[in-house]
Length: 376
Image (cartoon, rainbow, N blue to C red; front, side, top):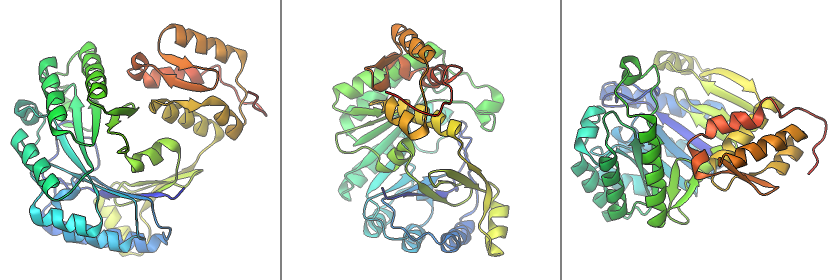
């Protein structure tokens, strides 16, 4: 399968209070030098294989000039598949959308987060609900037929009734794809440092299960824990991450995966610039995936997909024997209502979706041991 390409555009107009990503609130004159160096990174990498998908993430890629996006696409091998760009409401214009279409961008991910203006103000977002409605209409007018909307559940002081109104708007606007993320507070974020007043765990659970039920009834397929799509509109790029397909990342802090090796770029904009200006790739570190690391990822990523995964295929690929104690644990987790296992495919139940990481840990340690063979 052809690889995917991730391109990191770190620039933002301001850092949202929940954000812990590598972003830069920088003046516009810094955009072009960064992109010039990113193109230099592509050249130095020797990456020549035509990718099946390209994903521009950030940051806010849509705040830089569309001509810079075009330049990056010209520097990459041609992609005939899915090309996604993350955007923020209020950063799109008719001319920008025209250039996106002309350069091959065919999927827009819109960082809505909420349709409730109070939620948006509290989160440090610069747009309002009217910006969202206007941008979605503009995207349709420019013939974009693959739109994703990001929502965040569990924003501080968010009420369940407001969350239901968010889902009402999804039903009216009918984007092809919806991503629902549970708010996670990391120390690097403003809220993580100041312990924002987030809702109780039962509110998170109610929001998530309400989304799962409402989106299913509206015709969306729940194909990954946080992602729903109308049939045929699953995110091809993200599916590569979840199925272990190699991908190449470019830009500050970008990660790459070759199948057995993972490596990542420096997170400092200054160091990124200095290394490329001296003709060096800005790689900060790497790791070779051990058998145990691959096993853990197979379970973690396999259980994130609602279709589950074939445990015997993993056993054959990684030379694993499942001991009797592991099957005992399977029975316990089934009785608890967290997983389903038909003797071949292992998957989470709706109750298990809320506990995915914990269930994965229960399945892996300490009962899953290394052996020299796997037997179905």
